[in-house]
Amino acid sequence: MIPVRINFIQDRHWRLVWAGALLPILAMLGVLGLQWVDVRREMETEGRAIATAQAEMQRLRAPAIAKPDPRYASAMQAAQQLQLDLNPAFAAVENLKIAGVRLTGMSLDTKADILRLDYEMDSLAQATQVTEQLNAGFESKPWKLGGVSAAQSSLKPGPGNLAYTLGGQTQIQQGQVFKAHWSVRVSVIVQ
Image (cartoon, rainbow, N blue to C red; front, side, top):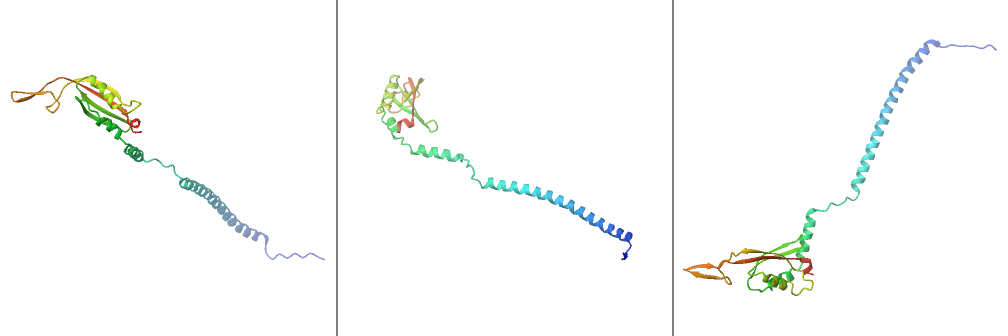
């Protein structure tokens, strides 16, 4: 048998056609490859952004550490101070009956928990009497004498003052007075 060769088309011409068709296909594959790399890069960037957003959402959903309201602490302190029964402290002040001793000032420092009384008296010996009367009824003697100072009298005419009338005008007998202050922890007295 004799081999028969039939050439329907010329080889060289079709090689050029196939090469011409292959070049655009390769160019399209190259462009698609570059686009795929860009898309892949964008997907990774988006994935990181999504992970960051999810982490932020988890952080925001977590129970927040409540910052205390600064007004709350002072309101609670005021409420506690209002609940204190200050009657024992005021009773000690009201029951003080010594002639020549005058209460000139009273201050309550709620932060330091201290009640301070300022008295003016005619003699230094009265300071001891005031201390004894303030501490009457307390075993621990909570009232403490903070200090005594001497001052010139600034009395105005009134009951108990040494005043006399001379030529139709009231005259005040000037003398030395003593100013003293006592302090006590409020929490010690009210318990």
